[in-house]
Length: 390
Image 1 (spheres, rainbow, N blue to C red):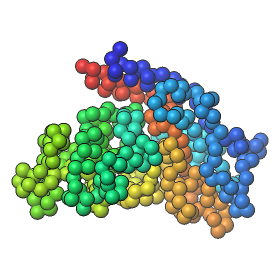
Image 2: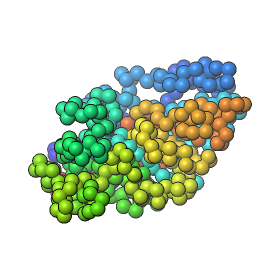
Image 3: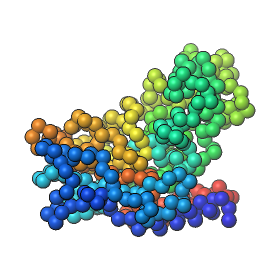
Image 4: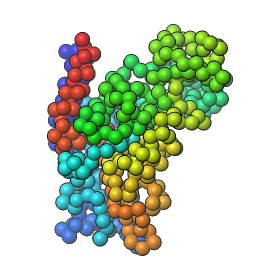
């Protein structure tokens, strides 16, 4: 069996396991017969433990931990806790996930905006940035950087470009394959449902998955193009030319003026690509379902875009941990907080935030199955892997 055939087999096994999952409440959050929760709240109705234990012992998981090299985190479809009388975009007769599925199936959703971070690419073998033990920043000690983020700082790059080029050699497109999540986003495009895919990632895996350039906004740039860093020159150099230079251990220098050549990745202190600013206003104003996946939502101006959709637009976060929650009652995700009465009321409208905790690939498989797209998702993924075999 080839490596890619093994990947297909592994994906099929994962799919069958994920589909056994049910929507999950924590044991101490299960509704009573009257629909209320046993979870303690303060006098304003705010849950006393806003970061609940989802009550899913790893040993009881329906998905085999043997499928993963890292410690396995089972999927949890979060069941929001709302005070009595709180309005919600989601049906009280089904989970938030199934409510979203119903919206898509009935045609009430047709302009989906996806926002994604490094978490959608980790299963491809690309580490994220901020995981404490396995993230890129945690593994940069060998470079003796003044601080981890210096590797993406222009001033430091001008002074010492070697650390960045060394890292770029490991990350350059062509070494990794798109994940199931990338193909799910491609499937949204194929269904005519994807308004735009905003990605923080620089790995170009969206392009490899077949998502059209028109639908992609690489908010932090990418390796797809490269330019001379001298603003007076700014000569463009091909991705392949830069890749060869880096692979050979050379420092790419402009063939016109001799200055450093940098892939068009947005470094700290640089403006985001103009395409981000040109499209975001109309995209988020037109969005009727926002899906946020695999991001800590810590970097601006990307993160605040979750608040640019209208107040009656459902938002779904798929991530290994909660993200984007802010103390301001009118900003950030509110999975079950702030939808209260009186001075703590959320003035932006009804409860509209859904949450799936766990692996992005598994969540997309689950979504595809509920939508009736399971076979199409697998076919997209398998066609790509089979093509690599040939």
